[in-house]
Length: 219
Image (tube, helix red, strand yellow):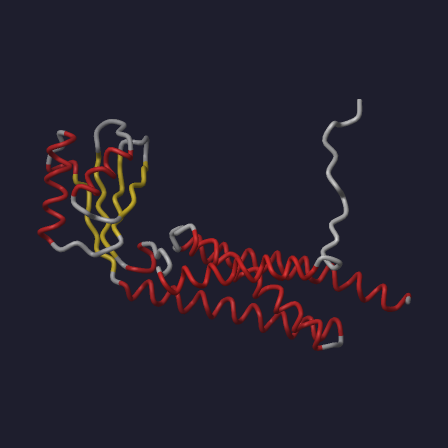
């Protein structure tokens, strides 16, 4: 039988472009506003912090470990490794000896752990995060420059290249806006995400430009 749900196959983006301009502009302005006022939610990869690895001896719900962090007013995340018995606690601020010892004492008391249960402690400086930020910006700029040169060579007109860059910039700003509005942690996967969006965005753009170029020859 026929499907009861039929998806409209044609979306008149060009005809209703002003509506889509307004929607995009609104999302970006709100996102930039959140980013400037509240700041981005940078993860440990960018801020520096502390990592503590603990062998719980049994499976423990991460929410229970996170509750101990909240009791100590520590902002961080809990990651499981191994067979859900080893826990990695990552905090976005570098904890001094006193705070680390206080947190470890609470964990030992709450989960009946011994000294041997604390497998390791590491401190991360924010310099690594700054280097990552710098490299992420360089990667996006180099990708953009490469695309501009390639499109100028392929399509023989600068307006194609500038239009493609505006499209990429739009997609990256939308992504940044969502991260800012919903306070999603900005960390290593975020850089990979931005570069993936840049790649797919330019790929789609080149496919459309190819069709425009074909139509220009025929018309």
